[in-house]
Length: 150
Image (cartoon, rainbow, N blue to C red):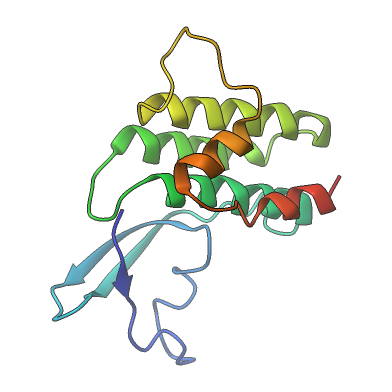
């Protein structure tokens, strides 16, 4: 997980503008900055266009990303969690609405297992949201998004 800044992205002539949309899976190059590294080049790997116009699926994506963001530390690589997130965002476009809730629950279990918060094969905590909120010592803000789209 890294934090970078993309200077000049709001300019209408910026080549990075379309590539750095929210939820885009990109490969980027960055120059080392004093406080934050600066994005210099961007290549889109997947923009997830199949669900960008669907409010329920966008709300789901926000929720998945918040879970990963809040449970992982900065400047620590965790390829398995990243790949799980990318795969989930790819699968999201193919899901029926009835499959979203079980899909999100399965995602949470996989992330918690991958990060070592629950052991594979052992019983899963009853309320995953409450367990995650306990771990992050705060509320999941995007949980409300999913409730509004039911």
